[in-house]
Amino acid sequence: DAKTTQPPSMDCAEGRAANLPCNHSTISGNEYVYWYRQIHSQGPQYIIHGLKNNETNEMASLIITEDRKSSTLILPHATLRDTAVYYCIVPFYNQGGKLIFGQGTELSVKP
Amino acid sequence: DGGITQSPKYLFRKEGQNVTLSCEQNLNHDAMYWYRQDPGQGLRLIYYSQIVNDFQKGDIAEGYSVSREKKESFPLTVTSAQKNPTAFYLCASSRTGVGYTFGSGTRLTVV
Image 1 (tube, chains in turn orange, purple):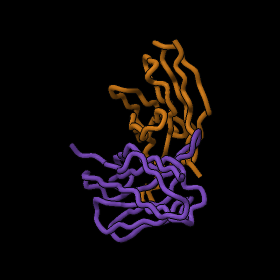
Image 2 (cartoon, chains in turn orange, green):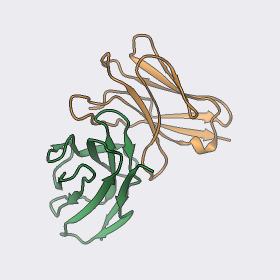
Image 3 (cartoon, one colour):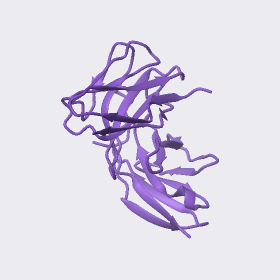
Image 4 (tube, chains in turn blue, red):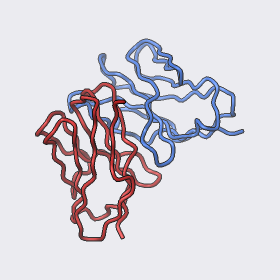
C-alpha cells in the first residue's frame, strides 16, 4: 500500500495559488517526500521533494509540517497547463527505493 | 543529455503472442522499475531491480517477466499468460531512492 493519502480531486481558479495536501503519518525520520504530476497519458513529471525543511523551486513550494506527518504542495499562480493528477509519494527505501503510487489528486484549474 | 528511453511508443500485439518493451537509461542509476497504468487509474508496480542480475516482483507481476543483464537496460516481456495486457507501461530509474526519472511510456494494445 502507498504510504500517503491525498484528496481525490480539487479545483483552483486560474492565477490563484493551488494548495494540495498530503498525509504521510507513518513517515520515518530519514524518508523524503516526493511530488510528481502526470498530465494525461504522459510519464510522471518531477516537481519537488523534501525531508524536513520547506523547499522551493521554479515550479512549486513544498511545506512540510514540523512533525513531518503531512505536507502541502503549493503552485503559486496556477495556469490551465497545471491541470493534472498530482502524486505525493514516500519511497520504500528498504525495498529498492520502489515508489508505490496512491490515486493522487486530480487538480482542475479553471478559467 | 541523460535520460530514460522507452520504445516503441505504441505497440500492437495479437492475442497469444509475447511482446517485449524496451527501457534504456544513461543516468548511471542503479535501480529500475516497471509500472502499468490503466485508464483513469494510478500506476501499479510490476517489477523492480536494485542491481544488475537481480530483480523483485511488484504488486502485479503475474504474466510479466524481466531481465537485468546490463545496468542501463531493463526490458519487460508481456507474456501470453497476462490476461489483460492492454495498458500504458511506464519505466523509471533512480539512484536507489533518490532522483527518480520516468520514461514517456509505451502504449500496448492487444488486437
